[in-house]
Length: 325
Image 1 (cartoon, rainbow, N blue to C red):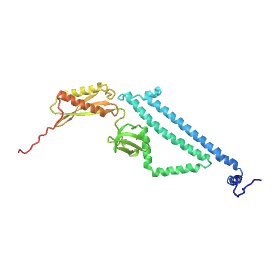
Image 2 (image 1 turned 60 degrees about the vertical axis):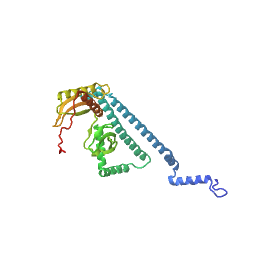
Image 3 (image 1 turned 90 degrees about the vertical axis):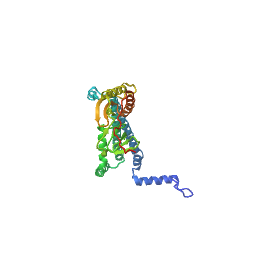
């Protein structure tokens, strides 16, 4: 016979254990030992195994995506795919490969996010089912909530669909300089809902993808430096064009700019004829986002060369009449 109370009347550990056992029998039934084992050992172990499987699946899928991104960025494709992915005649191989790396990394980031959401959603539903709760009402409720959100958050759905379309169509990526109408600048982040831009003054702009109606990408594949040089009306235009052609060719041959200017410069000729000046246009095809650096170098060299050759830039020719003193 067990002693259930001590001499002072306080319960002994045996009494506490007997009380706890009787409570478990009333809560779990006669087979309380097996049910207790199920809730404390079997189900947690099953959920742990499901969690490890989800982590392993996520790691494997992300590793596969990373390898595909790496292969796509390096161009390690089959001959059939490579034959269909040859660069266009006006696109140098280096620019195409750089754009391929940028596109592959953006697509890899999107695929990683989507696969993570899918894997963890499946894990959560499977864990709920393992705990013994019916998942049918949960899935039905999720469907109803999804329809409600679809009607109540149409702009959010529009932003998501627009973001996915822009990423798949490669309209722009991180690092591009774009003009989206309401803002322009360098793309710092591309999300499914918003795009983050930073302009030349350092201001950060958050633009909703659903509100972007047009995109002007200033750094995709290649760019062009366009300079309109105004000269005085009495200058020799043949000499002006020849000097501009020489200056542009010097930049083309310069080792510091050889990787920036990707084609032979061109002088297109007279662009504007006014009563005060004549504008002559010179163009240089450059690497993406290098057109501004090439333009600054060209302006400096043109000014020095014009001073050396005695060519006058445009200057005011209007006469000012005043009343004599």
